[in-house]
Length: 88
Image (cartoon, rainbow, N blue to C red; front, side, top):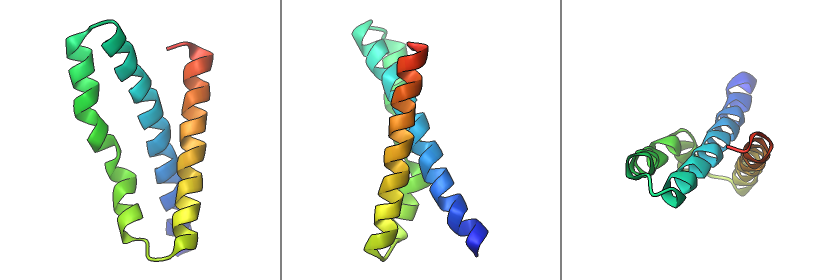
C-alpha cells in the first residue's frame, strides 16, 4: 500500500514537469508562427494531463488533494527551472 501511495505523487510530479516543458515548446512555436509545432503541442497537452487527472478526481480528502497540489507545484517549478537553465 505504501509503495502505490508514493508512486501516485511521483506520477503527478513527473506529469507536471513534462507539461511545463511542453508548454514552453508550445509558446515557442506560437511565437515563431510554426503552425505544425503549435498544433502538435496543443493536441498532446490534454493527454499529458491524464496521469494526474484521474488521481485528482478520485481523491476524497482535502489533505490528499493538498499533497497532490504540492507535487504538481514542485513539478511545474522544476520544469520552469529546467527550461530556464537549458534555454529551450
